[in-house]
Image (cartoon, rainbow, N blue to C red; front, side, top):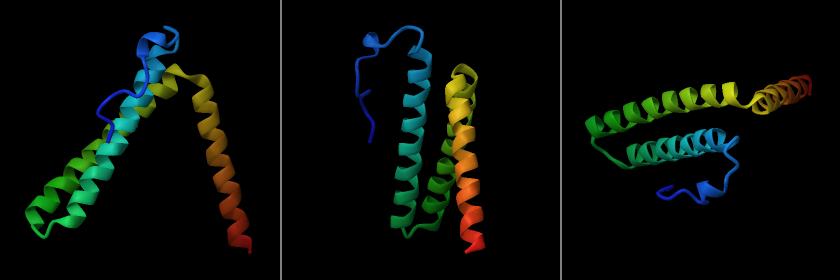
Length: 98
């Protein structure tokens, strides 16, 4: 789990600081999603499981919020995300043809 930022933010170029903060926030939310979903799979208490899965869904919303903000602040990230989507689309089309 991410409990400490793995690098010194004071050494980040001020122009890139917000982008790095957003990436750290996304990592933290993904980590939380994994934790809550894993804990939910371990419990036999249906109420506790429902609460954990509900919180995991909320964390997924947070990922979307942070990612949306990152795409506003980092044009290159937006372009590369779109390129990645295209590559996956092509790969899936190739798989369907085979």
